[in-house]
Length: 102
Image (cartoon, rainbow, N blue to C red):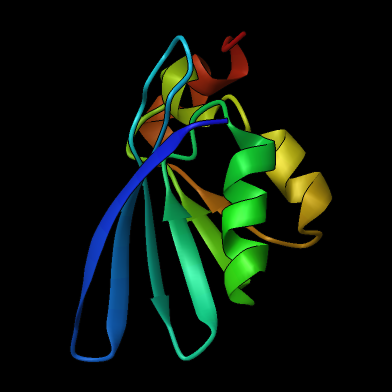
């Protein structure tokens, strides 16, 4: 899969915007420091995002969701299976939308 990755570093943090080149090109953000990382809005590309983290040897600590639209949350369950015990955080007001996401 073709992926565009852009990023930089500041104060020890590595920040990336991971954009899979698939039909729905959502932005997934990755922040990493000292071998730990978190994802923001992982979108649809569970396999690609997982491979991106593993290639760098990073340990996924949590998934942050800005809101519950399907293009932001679609791979959360699969990522949580691939990375057991990784929590996902979402504002409580979006819970209803999340429960009805495809």
